[in-house]
Amino acid sequence: MSSIPDPIVDGLQRGWKVHGGPHAALPAALDCDVAIIGSGAGAGITAEMLARAGLKIVIVEEGPLRSSHQFKQREIDAYGQLYQEGGGRKTKDQVVNILQGRCVGGSTTVNWTGSFRTPPDALAYWGDKFGLTDFNEAAMAPWFEQAERRLNIADWQTAPNENNDVLRRGAEKLGIPTKVVRRNVRGCWNLGSCGMGCPTNAKQSMLVSTLPVALDHGATLLVQTRAARFELQGDRVSALVAEPVALDGAVTGAPVRITAKHYVVAGGAINSPALLLRSNAPDPHGLLGKRTFLHPTAGGSALFNHDVAGWAGAPLSVFCDHFLHTGPVDGPVGYKLEVAPVHPTFAMGNGGGIGVELAQRAKDMPRTQLMIALLRDGFHADAAGGAVKLRSDGSPVLDYAVTDYLLDGVRRAYLTMAEIQFAAGAQAVRPVHEQAANYATLAEAKAGIAGLAMKPFLATVGSAHVMGGCTMAADAARGVVRPDGQHWQLANLSVHDGSLFPTSLGANPQLTVYGLATRLTHGLLQRLGAKPLILA
Image (tube, rainbow, N blue to C red; front, side, top):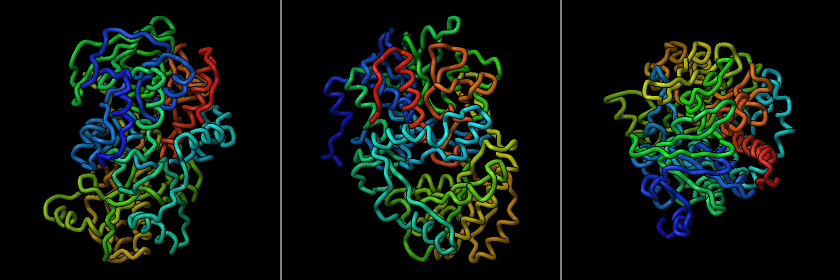
């Protein structure tokens, strides 16, 4: 890959203003028009639009700046450098493993490229329950269209790898519809290592799309710099205090004080509400950090009599949302079916088991298929999400309960995945549950799944999607943030990330963040008196 141009290296050589970590030292103070906390989906869109409008901006990112020449398709490098808490972030009770990016580009640098518009039933629920009546499907369509043009989001045209094709052909035999995933890629090499950073710059993450544009327009980027707290004065933010950190999070020097006309919080669900909590931001209705959602995800593996090679090829190219729509949105929890790449550390670390059993599963990896079910929480009283809280050192943790309501959905998803895998020709299936075994027939699987104890730690549940915590709503009694993205009590602070969501989605969230950020930044430009522009 050494012959592939690296836009980050090229930009640094052109004189981009980058401070922190191995780059230029952090100054003691900075002044700007807008300070943006984070560099992921919401931050990247916001940064490009503000910079192109001629505003002076500073982007504050806790993680490191890494780029294609450093992406070696090695899990051991990627998880420690590119993910929150080394890929080991968990809920407070340690039940759910949470994958979130922590690098320039945020989770867009390490996600699997799935790009889905917000499901209409979620938007309708937001309108009904949170007063967001102007966020319906028709109203959001123009903003999604801009993001899709800018980031080359389109149906994946290449045949799915075998891992994905198991979902397609098994569902087809059962009469269950599947769809092709829309991906934000250009010139994709179909390598399959999206979760470790794209070594060819095909993935149109914020790292190679919006952030370089912002930097070319004079933006300043602070890396390995943690937003510690806001200083507040009346109904305004007077400054952001940020501190330099090592890759392990340890503070390495004196803080920088950033003053701005406006501040945009876009650190992602968990980190965004945590920053406001550390800052003692006004919270008159006790909503800050609450209603934080995960898409709790169950897994089901299957063995075939041929190689699946689930690590090769686009990791996500087929999906099924049929089981989101078999009942009312606020009824028994629905789930979306996808597959997960079968990379050794990821698959073995999240698949359960120890000793001889785990060793055998490692030997079986080449012919193993891994299906996942993303549960849609946030629409039922027994799936009201969790709460972001602060540890004694100020770091965030998500207190989130995997309830019996959710576990009922996990059991139903186990059965659905097994049925599809057997229909696709599996020799054996095994739900990702500590009590499960390899089941050789569907009848055996049904009996085995019915007998599983559905309890946390036994039923393995993870999530790569975190949403909510700074709920957007039509009035302050229902939300932390106004429909235009501005904080209800702080006049010069906005939130532009997935923490805005009033519920989870039932779809991978990056395009929802892109669309919302495009719309909200358009409005912010007008409020700041800058020239209007479109993203694309």
